[in-house]
Structure formats: C-alpha cells, structure tokens
Image (cartoon, rainbow, N blue to C red; front, top):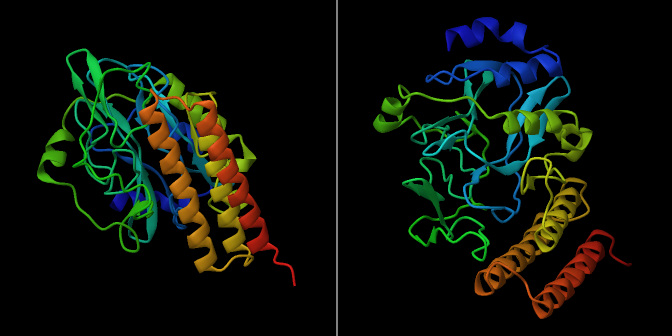
Length: 315
C-alpha cells in the first residue's frame, strides 16, 4: 500500500483514456492497484439482472470505474469466459492511507477476494453461489441468477445461497464500507494463474466510459443503464421498466421530492413487481404470457402514477 500512497498524487489527474488503459492491464495474482483517488465511489445501485442469453455465459456484476470526469458506472453484463472452467473475480475499491485504490478483476479457477463487496446475483461478498462448472458445462443456480430455463437447461436450485441484492450496498472495502480481510483460501488462490478481462469486457468498459449518462455526477449514483444482457446488448421490457422506476424514486429522494419513507414504500412495491416477474418467468419456462404481461403492465402503470403523485402532490 506504500506504493499506492507514494504515487497517488500522480495517479489522480490521469485523463479518462489513461485511467481506462491502466485498468485494462493484465492483472497479476496480487490484484495490484493501478488507480487511486481521494473520493470514494458511490454506493452500488439496485438493479435487475437480465436473463442469461445462452448456455456458457457468466455474469460479471456492475461496478464504479474512475476517469477524468469522475466515477462512471460499468453495467453488469453476461459474457463468455476466455476458456472452460474459469470463474470471474470482480474488481473492487479498497480504502487505505487516505486513498481509494482500484483492484482489477480477473478470471481464474476460483473466485478470489473481491473486498467483501456484496455485488449480488451470487457474489454475496465472498465466493460465488451463482453456479459451478460440471466438466465442460456451466450449471446455473436459479435461486440467485436469472436464467431462461427454456433455452438454458443446465440449472439447479440451491436456496442456501442468500441473494442479498437489496442488502448492503457499500461499494468499497475499508473504514466506512465493508471491513473484511481475505480468508486463507482466498490468499492461497492469489497464487493461481489468472487471466485478464476478455476483449468484450474491455469494449464494455470503453463504451461505459464514453457515455455521459453513466457518470455519477450526471446520474447521481443511479445510472439509467445499470445492466445489459450482452455487450452492446439490450434490456428486457418488464425488468427494464422496474429499473427505470427505481431510478425515478432515487432521483425523487435526492431532490427532496420524496421523503425516505415514501421512497422506501415505492421501492418495496417495485421489488414486489420484480419478484412477480421473476416468479412468472420461472413458472412459464422463462417467458411471460400475454395475461402476465398485462397484469405487470397494470401494476407498473399504477406504481408510475403513485411515484408522480408523491413527487408532485396536489395542494
């Protein structure tokens, strides 16, 4: 960490291009720090995970990256691993010596230490509960990942893995965030052979860095595009609307248009709708029938009107 402190003043003013390039450097086993800043990243936004697009794709959670314009959100996305048997260890921000340093993510045979940050969807702070390799096939735990079982059949259910997507939203390790140390097995896994992010992941990062709407200074920590099905892909209708409603609620709270109590009640309604969508998809082979879509649309229309009424009450 002494190197981080010694070079912090040099690293902070780096332009966006340079900050992006340093994060794209192949990550050694020790997850060396390449970028450090004095200001901590925003909390993790609550968002919807799109269904897995096809067998073999692995989920890489969204995270806050840093460039010349400040923090920007890199959406969570499904990607193909560079080879069979590898798992993704997310990057994380760590706070020490007065600076926040970025520890880049990497591929490896085990999921290593990622700062104890609860990224959700199987990444609950340590390890990964979203699935596992069985020979040359990846099996998905549908208890914590969104999988269309009509197209992806290598699935199982392990409900002992708690999906805390709406639990702690701290986005860094250290005082004021998540305070945990690597477990012995995670320290051992640091010495395994690791692989850098794939070309698709690098392109995904680059796309996010060039989108002004992803800047925390623009979206106030609630990006409108928080997740995607694939790199340069899309959102799915009902889930995307839940995410948009949550963004409106967040903006209402930040601008003083909604009280925290109102925001909590509105967000609870959105979480209920999202759970309904997930349950309907599971019961219907990953799809929503016309009746289910109409019902969800009615509920979302009602929720949208309630958000507007609470933000702009009639006197």
